[in-house]
Image (cartoon, rainbow over all chains, first blue to last red; front, side, top):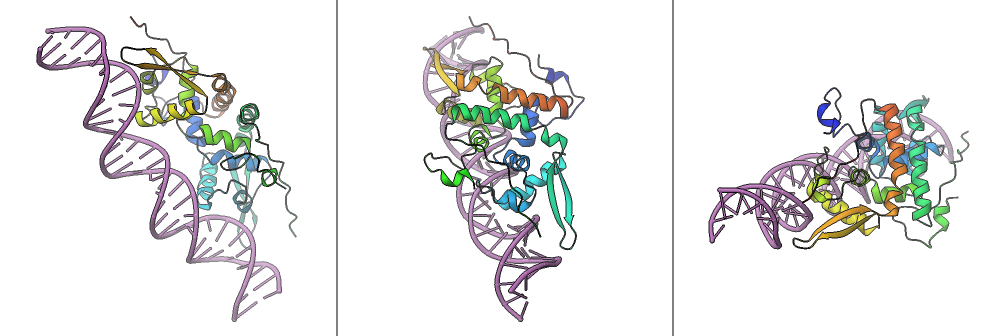
Length: 126
Length: 126
DNA sequence: TATAGTTGCTTGTGAAATGCAAGTGACAAT
DNA sequence: ATTGTCACTTGCATTTCACAAGCAACTATA
């Protein structure tokens, strides 16, 4: 009946359902907010931490690690003196945009009062 | 700067961001799988519980309750002798389809091996 | 009538994830 | 020398989750 039951070629955590597997990667309250921030142009740890939802820093560190591990985020050093990294979306990460867009569309219709955030203006660094 | 900071007319849990608010409703590992099952034509508690991901029954009961409370799911009695209910999506719930579709598209591209489930064939009830 | 089975949950318990505050290492600025 | 910033990590209490079992209200079978 279920294709899932006849397939054992791949190793999926819960099932071969595409939705289940997307949820295993980004299905929690915080991950897609980090992706949103990246889409809006944020790059630094501090910037993510400053978003109005107030993500706990241990969760933020964990989510960035996980997103990097699955190839959605790329972490690159931008400063050597104190080693500092910047984060950016890979193609795989940028392709999550339609998912966020469809969420925005739904929210616009059913959650009046919600408002999309403006693109992040990078602070000038001297 | 953030619109969020100037708006206090509505009461949103974390921010006025549409994405954050969608995640507060369906942002976990199980809720959208229940919605998926409803889209595929499942109606009864047992059917959701039988999905290959194996949702724990206490979680299932909780998610159905929450989805009903926020108007995504409608719970109606279909049998009186032993009082039994069936679940179905409201318009608000059916409008989540694009979100699931965009997840399927992403998964099809980046998670090879995933396969969408076929529409549920209702068992004949005598 | 007695026993077993089904459905749709609820309850109990341990494990895991989360939230919050505080701490830390490496530097920069005063 | 002291204070500050950034990018985290650590500890700990609280919440959520997963798993198993139980249970009420029937139905079906012997």
